[in-house]
Length: 165
Image 1 (cartoon, rainbow, N blue to C red):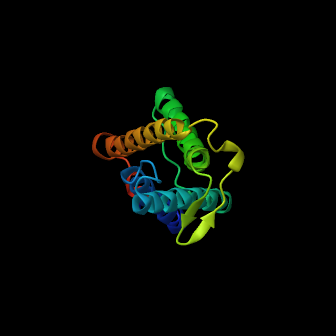
Image 2: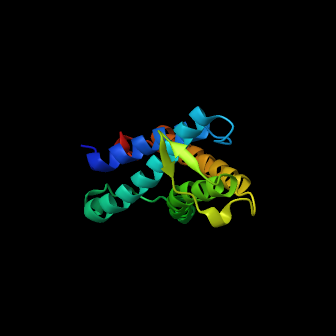
Image 3: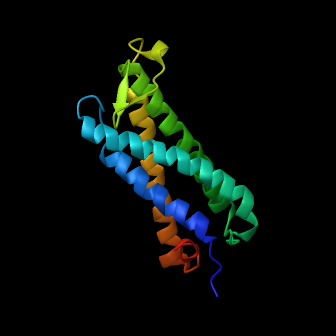
């Protein structure tokens, strides 16, 4: 029998993927296209909230996680490095997006409600490029993560992928 991650972690994992993909597809200056901007901001906010929920779920459920066999030191290094980077970027990218919005808007409305922006950042410098680069690095790491899961499934024939679906 395949040991799977707890359903809560699987749900957070896959909903995060949908939120990240939505944010990536709707990226751009939220002031130029308010509809896409709204979707992008909601997606980024969702990623942020899901990261917080993921941390809580991890603390409560990590003992129930499947133990995957590490084949060699390189695999172990890559696993730990990518995991740390993914977790770091799950928080850094949404925060940098919020700071980027604050750098280009003195106010922003989301469904008729004003979103608090950090007024001291407005107009001083543009943070959107940093947010975009971080987002692209993050999506590239997500792609690497997906390729690694497929590699495990098709070449190593272990249960790494099956444990998350």
